Amino acid sequence: ELIRFDMSEFMEKHSLSKLIGAPPGYVGYGKSGLLTEAVAKKPFAVLLFDEIEKAHKDINNLMLQLLDDGKLTDSLGNCIDFSNTLIFFTSNLGFPANISDLKFLKSGKNISKTEYKILLNKVEFAIKNYFKPEFINRLDDIIVFKPLNINFLKYIINKFLKNIYIKLYNNKIPILLDIDINIKILLVKLAYHPLYGAR
Image (cartoon, rainbow, N blue to C red; front, side):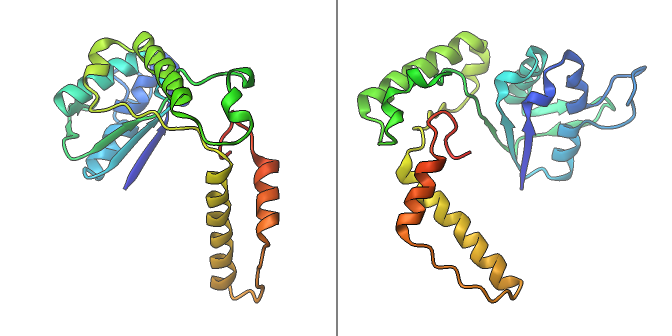
């Protein structure tokens, strides 16, 4: 079971209470938080904190406790065990913000080893400058994905087309789709933008 949190929704200091519940005397006291309640119900879950750098710094402090002890106490005093969860954080830190920094991606070709090493160094530098060392030390691994290129987007188009085929079949709609490879390539080239990947 995947439990996903878009961390852009937790930019304010008070948004910490959304995760573990509001303290006594505050609106919402008596209700468990989104995070603690979700894990209490599904202790064998995969937790995804998407774009963790957008969260308030207090939430990063909460993550320190979570990664260190494997437990969190909600506002009601319930101790929630996270030892059976897999925790993933995503971040865009260090990825070039404008197209001029993405010369190797403009063509849509594969990134070379040298270009990947440059990107890797930028990402690692940005992460080390943004997060506290104790947060980084609690992570098992940091993986820097290679940017999507046109070849990968072809696979994504095929995946979406397969989903359309399945929906047509399941809804008993008698339409047979046969899309030429050149049309797929054209769609990929029209959609490709190095900054946005598969979006």
